[in-house]
Length: 259
Image (cartoon, rainbow, N blue to C red; front, side, top):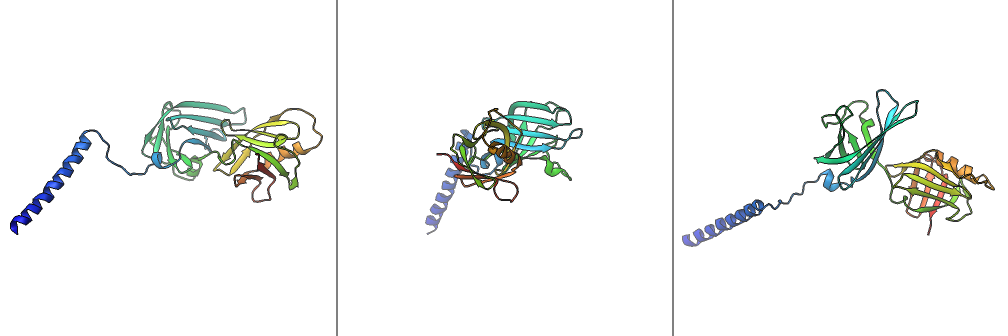
């Protein structure tokens, strides 16, 4: 009986030795051990554009767009808002991961912090040491993700404006949101309207002042359409129907997805 117990104990110890030896051999051969640690890099849909207005000591604010690409490249566009024509600065380059933070190369000393923290659908601008900025203005250092795949890159047929039905087709009465350029193209009978737009947090939308062709129109529908676009501040959609709204009021414009 004693001999049987010793044999069993030897088998257990020898088996443990083999497992340890195999693990050491695998590690020595350069195979990375399994790591299930969740980080912003491997668990968040971080690539895309982020927008916000950062505080500014000598201007009204800095409209900032940070674009992060899956190949590790970035573009940072800063628009300094002043009473004079705005100053726009653009920096491009590569970024590296440092935990849940990224560091932008190409940011020269004295030109601001190169650090951002990646979070769900937003990034935080960090201080020069890569730490979060605290205080009353901390929320002003957040850039929120732009875009909404459910509405961009599609043709939306205008079917209702200011509560009244619109009779037209997808060729004569429409809205197209181009996420590649952040430009909108719209039409309400005769003229093509082009304007910039921003979608923040998927549902907040803002249209900028634009331009259009100069054909004479038989009605004032186009003017009403442009006014609505300059007024709305949010959208809702189920993928087939799109509404543009002001606050919680009734939809000001209703669209259907063009076939």
